[in-house]
Length: 513
Ligand SMILES: Cc1cc2nc3c(=O)[nH]c(=O)nc-3n(C[C@H](O)[C@H](O)[C@H](O)COP(=O)(O)OP(=O)(O)OC[C@H]3O[C@@H](n4cnc5c(N)ncnc54)[C@H](O)[C@@H]3O)c2cc1C
Image (tube, rainbow, N blue to C red; front, side, top):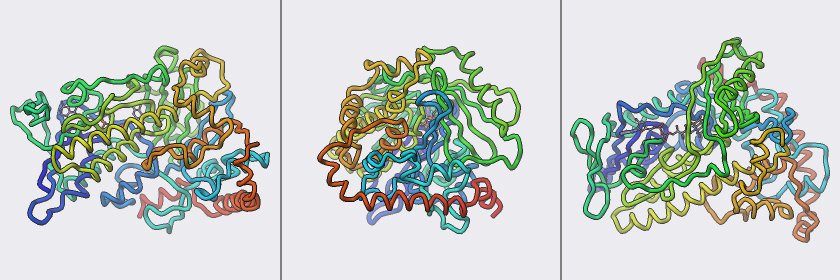
């Protein structure tokens, strides 16, 4: 098919979208040269340059676009991420739980959550059903040195340097995937009679035409926002955080441990992320400006960094990023589709941004419309599914807050106010009091967060589901299998703890190779 796709924006959204589409469509086809992918980036507007945690989906994405894992790890100062640890979210007293990337033992055939509740064991839910929390506690890697690229003992995504990731994607897109990279600042949009975008006029006076325009211009949202005026739907009534202070913190010593999970520590008006790369850590406080001041937030962030003996004792000078939590009402309008921050952004509590970019780009690439009639249908479907994704993201993030028992600051008290809980989440919570989340949570075939993620957060936060219900009698018949799985999980944990290398050791090997 001969068509031109113009992606505007050279941040991670732009380059990931370009790579995913070009990897599938840019090869010449019979009777034509194949799809032309153009990526246009302003020389005057910097990328966001943050976004360092991914989901395991990134392994598939990298493999699909043809990047070797070793190249990726070396070029992007990347490390392995096995999930997130949430510290102080329930009571604010240093307690913690994991949301690991490996599913509970026996998944998807057996739902261990009900059995775990029925057996009233002393183990936390996470430890009963997965060895991964214990592996993370010890700073171990998710795989053996001899494991093939992208293969694992325990499921993983990555921590990466966002700037270096963009550079790698750009090199790969231009050198290997035939993406036409152009520098130019879009100043005007030339509209066709039917309301489509016909071409973009650059500051240089040049025009660039295309069939489909992907808006990856971040907060500027020049196509979907400025040109089409698609309303922005704020989510600040549910998710209060609207400011981030980000720091790149140096290790105290060269051999300091590299955690293989993201640590998210609850603070007085938000939470601090802590992401370990081979050469440094990315640490930042994302908070609600209505609940604290920049000075107070900076104090809390500095105290966190200073209290960690693995970090160099340097006064941090954070970069401040303000954002409005929310998303567009519509994401695909005429021949323009928004991907990345231009489509929406909320606090990075579960690293939902890059996964949403991957899923959106994959969907666009699979469904790439041939003509304007197909475009209208595809656009309608994309909008439906993307709205569902955003609903899922907002409910899932809010879930981390509403189960908290913290009342120590106004921020935590406001988060438990029923008026701040989306109706869809209230409905789910009312069900989960008597039903363990399982395969029928959504009717979506493309899910961002499965029932497993809901379980890890719900039961990590000590939520109780009353399982005295007829539907669990069926599962009681699996009691023997369930006990065996929980027992085997313990054995597996011991085995992993005895055999997996430390994350630092494995990464040192990768970088030496
Ligand atoms: C504090 C913070 C922490 C985050 N942590 C995570 C995380 O751990 N995991 C995760 O998945 N996500 C995270 N994110 C989100 C992640 O950073 C973004 O999703 C990602 O960087 C994608 O950004 P983008 O490409 O949409 O926009 P940007 O990086 O802002 O890129 C915009 C591009 O548009 C171009 N542009 C703008 N205007 C024009 C114009 N007129 N003409 C031409 N080009 C133009 C710019 O030059 C630039 O290339 C985080 C975000 C923040 C703020």
